[in-house]
Image 1 (tube, one colour):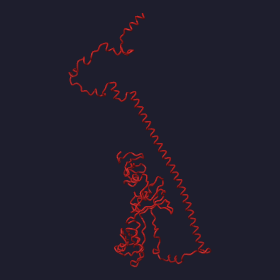
Image 2 (image 1 turned 135 degrees about the vertical axis):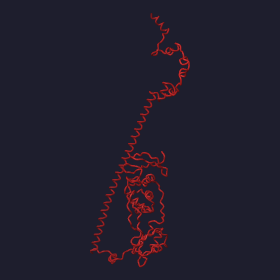
Image 3 (image 1 turned 120 degrees about the horizontal axis):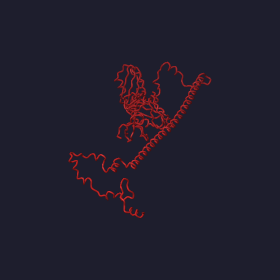
Image 4 (image 1 turned 180 degrees about the vertical axis):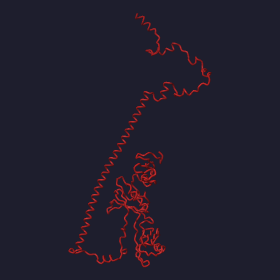
Length: 427
């Protein structure tokens, strides 16, 4: 079969056979009567091709073993080197703001909102962004101190329900079909054991949106385990910088809460009593959370056990159907061979051979292919009668009958001399 030639698939739709870069032949189904994934592509009613699903089924649906390590070098103008600058004067020109940050490194996209008095500035590398943030934090610009922090990442997604066999490389390769990836990692604990979560940051927001929508609408499996990934938006949070003193709002609430410093409460004081109530409430929260997690873990184990049983039954049914198909094929071959043997034994082989045995050599239509005579002379000038009907003596005509012990049916047998001798002796 030629590469790319469509054929009828076993799942109710046409299939296309393609070859992957590593030489494998992959059969991708382009239509399905239930799911609506047709030759036009996409979901039911969608006229665009589902290129993402086709790419996954043709390039990634194969054993993923010994993947090469990822390039962990920092990319230029990444999401980690993007700063948020707040509390800016509304009358500051765009060129002046840009010139203020240009001396710390190469700038990418600079967005300034005068109505909101804030700006987003993207540096080439995080080190330059960190340097600008450290030196310009709290700087007075027209009697207003600037507040600078790292911008929240809006192009990332959080991946949950990962199996322990999913690595950074496999996660990167699985989600690269949605768009260019900036960074990718599987979250582990202090012992290096995976927590089942991962973080993927795309270079643009379009890739994160497609990955979020596609994985929510369909089941995306990364390994042989029937555990689909759960994709959620990445929660904005800054785990590195925290909440510095310079970013605090020095209002009345701040002053009232900061008037007392750190201390230990006396056991007989009301502060100690309310503090213990808070601790008991937190302990109750931890117990309920642990109980919920244990119930969830038990349900997950039962679900995996059911998946294993269903997979075993599915494979058994598949093998049974294949065996039945082979038995039917063997029966058909046996019947064909019996009919061929019967034809060769009792019918004398093929029709052409049988005709040649009874009517001489040549095909049945050969005697009708001779040109008819054109005139009466030609019709009767085909030789003398002696040539057409050679004379024969009486002995020649009855020679075959004399050679047999019994006379043939329909042939008159001449009496032999031995018969007359037997009659004379009898009488």
